Length: 69
Image 1 (tube, helix red, strand yellow):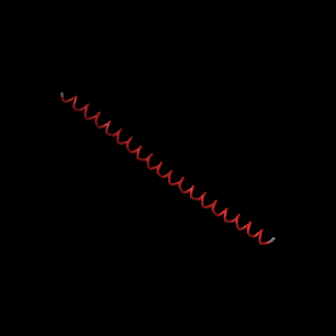
Image 2 (cartoon, one colour):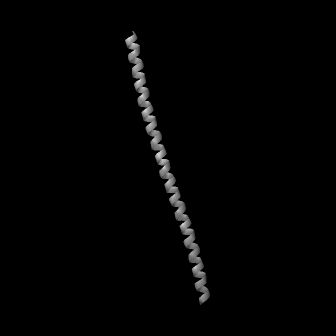
Image 3 (cartoon, helix red, strand yellow):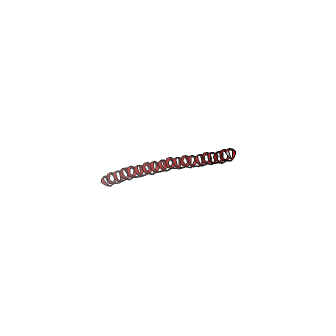
């Protein structure tokens, strides 16, 4: 009887270990995705800022060139 209980407890511990490994692997993947999303958001923000600066410079140059005529 003690061997059966030991065997069942061993199976439960092995199953728990595999479950912990699977959950930890999922958590790591989720965190890596969040870093990627963060990088994409920063890239979009930088592109937006550059577009605003280019538009401001273009407007300034256009206005100044119209004054020359």
